[in-house]
Image (cartoon, rainbow, N blue to C red; front, side):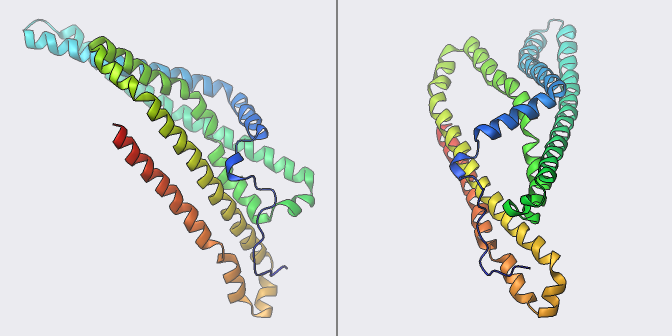
Length: 267
């Protein structure tokens, strides 16, 4: 087995600024098509939940107005109760659909990657270590598998704020104008957050893959290591990228903290 003291960087790891390559986007679209039925159902359920959430304040307000005026409000209270129950059912359905879509997408990605690795044969080991492949199949595939459900829920996530701005404009147009005036700045902050987070996560996963590859290599040659008495050296070799991994993880939290502070400033 190899006992090189310095772990070589992943030669095929994409640069942090170019993680979403055309091939990655094509893979994301393929995963979305694979789970099309579940994603479509999730989109519809999320839209219905958003619509019910936007209607609930209006119905509650109407019921409260009638109660304060001493007028009959049974019908409006019943409507508010029905909306609350509907929101609970829709949220539960969205959770089930989201989990199902995530699981199916992750399983599909794992089958796809496994098939490609087996098709490459021994050449796969020249590009990726065993530990790196295991990390991609177990952790990274699960993370990437959440993408189709996130895309499916994107329409509802957009409809909620838009509906809220429209409702705010109906109440007081000046409030809506003030909110819209700050929207471009908020969009810039979100774009910066997405860019910085993508870079940090990419760095973290690359270092994690290197450590997993070194660990798998050491486990595969544990008899040689024991016979040579180089346990301490191999332990140090496997753990050498740990400070770099820690820095990448801390950078992710720093990005989140800066984003929260900027959001509070904008608000």
